[in-house]
Image 1 (tube, rainbow, N blue to C red):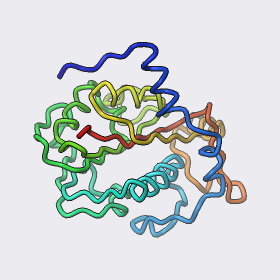
Image 2 (cartoon, rainbow, N blue to C red):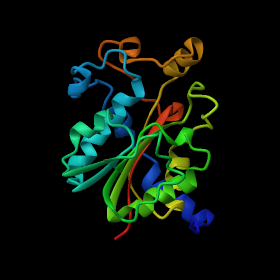
Image 3 (cartoon, helix red, strand yellow):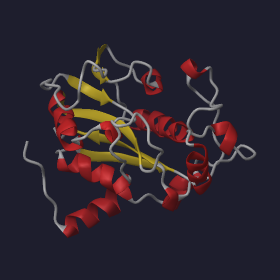
Image 4 (tube, rainbow, N blue to C red):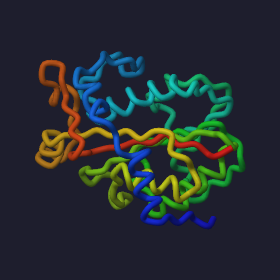
Length: 228
């Protein structure tokens, strides 16, 4: 695939229209709603804190865009996001044996769900292009990725992306950005590097509040769409 290139003006426009989030975004989940995930026994407890906000945004976006895929591809059968999708057929593209660098589906899916994976791709542009090819025109893809994190699954761990990097990756591979989300705070960053383990809701919760600090982004996520 020949990747798209962008001028500085185009990049600035993408940032202003699709990446830069309003102040209201960072305030909407200071008071964290109850956990809606059945497979987690409706408890946030020690789940890695950024995943809470990933799920909350995902739920909102599925309703906002009335996403009800007929054919769904998923890389992890226990992804909690699956609970909030209505679909008819599911194809598991789990690693191993599947590798996003080499999958070869041709316009088979209406939705491709893969989370916490991009940091483990040595060539994310190739993998995202393969996902693009696997989707029918108008199909959606959703993923999340750390912007800052502790090393894990080494040596198959190559780095992270901030929201702009995530958006440009998908734009470069031909996708339209539908929504971008992000979460992070300095307390989380301190905790993960002090403990070298992920930090859950119970640790960061202060009277039901967990701050989302725009400039201390730790994870981000994207809903993107293949053009019609």
